[in-house]
Image (cartoon, rainbow, N blue to C red; front, side, top):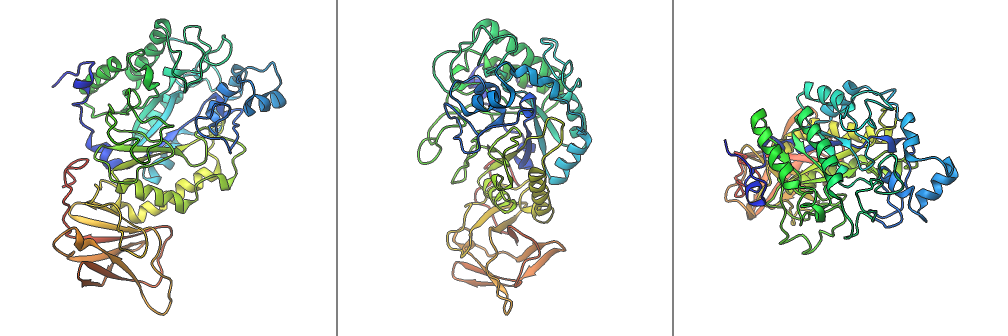
Length: 485
């Protein structure tokens, strides 16, 4: 058993576990004291100086002069109400962790990531290092522990994420970055940073979280420019070595890396190409990649504009079920996972617009999951010759072509899907079948030059995207991600 050292040279030898490649779908849960005011302007830009659509950033912007959140706070609650005054209304009164776990398992998620502590400095577990936590105040229960048990009982992996590396609120002190040992600057500025006292306090809580719950992932928000300041390499090495003792295969995201892809970086064009990153997977936020990536990646986003619950978001502010399914298929075809966020209310209930999208995704996966779970990228992700957008995946010797819309609705004749599969492999599939609610439905295949023409029914039996299994198609890309063999 190898021992990891706190250097990038050593940590970069860690391999992404097969289970993470296979899972494809994770559920992110942003839930905390910020779920009480639950407010952010929906038209703000991510990472904005004066406003953000992220409602979980309420305790930052409520102290930012000139921000819409500060104006809203004054008008709604008054000048004297502090962020800590919301704790009493963060009750989890209607929370059922078993019901959450059932929902996430039914959708098809392979892992769940709960915000163990967000940037507001309020741990959702019974921390020894601060009485300002969910076990002592508000819900008065160990939210991390309760959800961990429920999720793992259903065979899902679990991790509490940790964002306290860059807190913007600490009770008992004024304003953003209230801890006196952290310079009070905007989180996207290059100046300022944590002092030794703050780093010791923050890392003690994080190590406690790791020790108590043995997370399957280390998902954390170190400000990348302060990676060395917060001793991230030491923490990751310790985590990898502990996981080996636990007998667990684990993964760490890229947000401790000095050159990691942060939530605001423009990944189009060449901005990402050639950048170094450390960790097991990269984490673009509210954006995706255009091509298959050699490195494993995970797109994270909310169903709406915000991660935390935002009471002013309406149904139209959320991804439609069809857009969610199509985006998910696109991500998986390019070697990505989707970490899809839900933002519960303060009482622990999941808003209907979020729940309905999860249920729609789960229903689609119950029909088409063979094209998703445990799949690997094929030689190409997209088919440029097809009449409709197509995404390819590959699993166990079969290629899956998923059409992102149905190719025609003519009642008088069958539909037809054209695929340029033979541009990339030598042999045509042994057979083809459309995945339907009632199982595989054989498709007649006509081969013309490099094109496969698949005869389909006149109408599909489900919505959003439509998968054909092509049996016995080689994958020249084997080795990307994991074996896939």
